[in-house]
Amino acid sequence: MSERTRETGDEERAPGYERVESELLGGTLDLEREAERLASMGEPTRFTLLYLIAQADRIESGELADALDRRQNDLYHHLNRLEDAGLVGKFRDGDARVYELSPLAETFVPQVFEAIGERAEAV
Image (cartoon, rainbow, N blue to C red; front, side, top):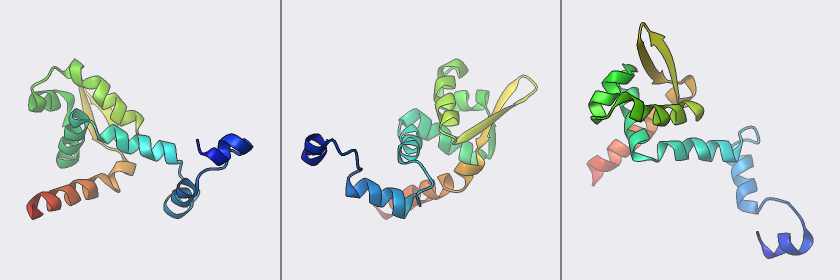
């Protein structure tokens, strides 16, 4: 909290936040929600799961568990966090849970991984 906010009780957002909300988020997206969405990607297991899902288009939870050498139950809280963030969707195919990128994630997640891959090549 800034000195000005403490002294006046004014709850206005700092100019930097207001700029992001108006210029980047167009006044329509929620800053906290978008930051949380990105934060959910920032954990190494979730980052890896998201990459594998993006590369496969659709992938069963058992395949994800095999790829990470983990039990499926150990991955569900990570997959649920990605789902809560609006990045993946799931459906059942028989007994299997199948994961795919959400329509929202399809618009930017591949670009994120492409940019990271390009950076890795440039190093």
